[in-house]
Length: 210
Ligand code: ITT
Image 1: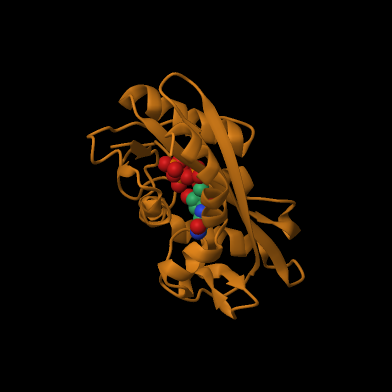
Image 2: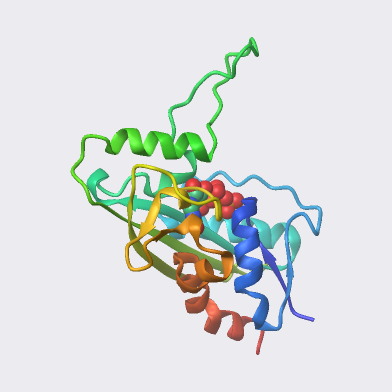
């Protein structure tokens, strides 16, 4: 059976990618399934560089063809921020009462609050899009890419409890819903990640000889 490792430590992405990739006739594995714990330093200057680094690191460590996703939210009024830095977009702060001086990153809710704070004095609508670049790497070092975008706008009050990350403040005007108000099946029909996976299908077919 063909095996594909979903090379991400983000639980929200794992859930979506398992659903998006399930029709390909390939056995999907996660890092947890194979007891592989890897933290990749995302120091690239493009989504493709980061996606490629993640996919190659996991492919070489596991010996399996690996699919990584590097994604982000780009807000027009902030000149494309947080973009590549979406997962780390929040002021650093000291952990309370720990006595340690090491700074730690906030969670998804901190990042949404920080984004809204930065948009507060900008005129609405706050047009934005999600971007995803998928990299599929073989253990021998071959890498192929696919991309997807999803357009909408940021709204000032959170709506919905589905998805992850910036979904509760990412509004899709045609549906009159935020991404977090969609169930996974709906999100997986129109998201940046869904489009990137669709565009990656020929690559998967070629790599697995399907
Ligand atoms: P991995 O690198 O392990 O895959 P990550 O969360 O660090 O996990 P990225 O570097 O690609 O992944 O950062 C993407 C960030 O962009 C993610 O943490 C969210 O904050 C945001 N994001 C991406 N896709 C999203 C989505 O579908 N809905 C909401 N936020 C999303």
